Length: 388
Image (cartoon, rainbow, N blue to C red; front, side, top):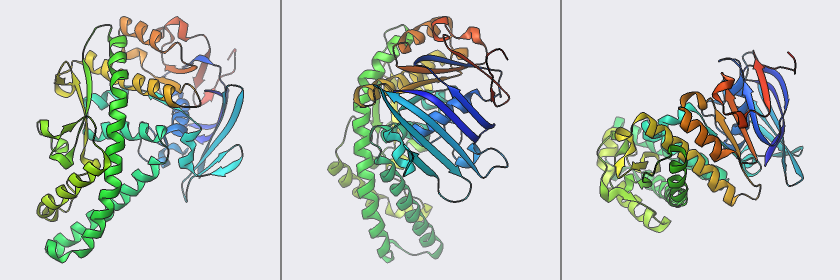
């Protein structure tokens, strides 16, 4: 799949933009702050329903505007699809596919993209929340209905936490909270489905990550993934040592539901004291190991970069093997400036056979020549015409 044409209206710093793209590499060049990342961000938003830079959709709407529009024409095997998303300051967002209204959460069925950006270093070195977000965005791309499951889980979790806080303020004991059992049941149903899906995803990613790490680093290292589960006693958000008993490759929904229910019972007193739900997929982590050691805290800067790249390349390889739309669009946002010459060359080799690769760079010479065949220049929220 590739994006043949992209249009923006009031998105980020673009009042209006229209740009034709080609299969293969497309390089966006411009000084920092001109809008290169905003262009590629609009495409990846269609695929993941999220931004890699901000958590609120309002930040994507140009200052002074009430709505932003992203419209992309996609092509695959001679078939064209027109997708459109309207982000609104007030009211729900709207989406269309081939001019017919759809729910925004249905867009990932039609758009596949994988983005790697400097912020991805935080997947390896940062907090568990970033690794959970990485898994969940990929889950939605692979199985779009999981967007609804994740949203429902967050809603139930919020309601349960509100009830726990109210009970704490009123000094109500656990035996006096009959409604908590109702929320527990719903939380376990949704949470066990998420835990099972994440575990299956980690198992599917594992061989691709190992291959991608070797390809990018140019050295043989043992890059591994595993799920660290709070329902089995892990406390990754508390920055505790990894508990071997809580690390699993996969877990099915029935086993997860049983362990989740036991964890809620076990934690009831502590949850009432703190007003928080202390176990569930919102407290889990993706454990990244390099040569048997946790990458977070042990991997060097170069090793962390290679691991982050490997996670994104593995995601693209997994999507490529499962999507009826062919290759995902691969986006490399300001990546080459962060890499040494060897990693630049090996990354270029790893991505050059994808159907479409979008690259942004402030310095054109940072990008290997084979990836600069089609260059688009950006200045001040404008796509420059040839010769400008």
